[in-house]
Length: 295
Image 1 (tube, rainbow, N blue to C red):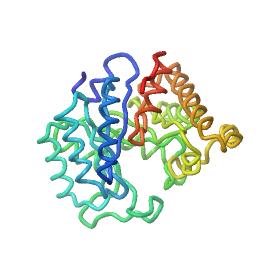
Image 2 (cartoon, one colour):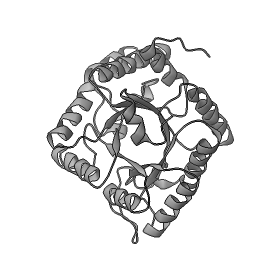
Image 3 (tube, one colour):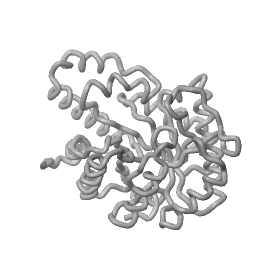
Image 4 (cartoon, rainbow, N blue to C red):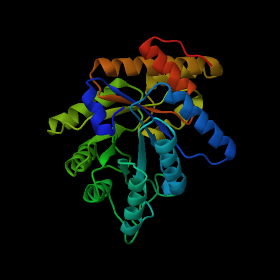
């Protein structure tokens, strides 16, 4: 296995990776580690652990990332956000992760606590932008640094052009790769890739995907992506909304088709948002590699 996400791109094939979030209860914790063990067998290129809304789960994120590094064969990526932290605190977090042998980071500005779309206020002794966090990481070690990309533009950006400029700035500050917010149609990713390439930036952009396994995901998709759920696809789900099994089957099929199309288009990697459950991700994976899923 590669020692960094940066190295994994040298394999000459699309990377595959999974994202987890810190659990809140003992039962959630058991579910997370069951999921991690089930997905470990698929030998992903890396896994990432989110920071939680407003950085609220900082300590749990660090603990889980450290345990993945020490107790599994997986390559962990730690999310790091600027929300609510002074520069001194951020340096301390980076140092703790580095001491645990973790050298892969995802640098994010983060959302305000309590309301992702609320007013963003910097810590008085902190950082204002994800690009500043990239700079901090670059100044403190040989880290592989990822950043976020937004196929539909970040909800706070005034235009697609402005959002693209912000993204290019993060890359020029030293980002090694990017992971997109989730999207549900290939054109969203391809337009983003074309905009970035036209600006002269060749940083790999991994496609962030999450299967629709229930109607609630569609209901929250605008918050997730900053754009309405695709109308035609939404109509197809609405027609079967009263049949949870059919909704799930359609979600798996559509995500499998989307991932296959993106691979055909030369995407450098697929990043699955798992919601700390393995089965939907394993089913999509099986569709891509034509193997049955057990369990």
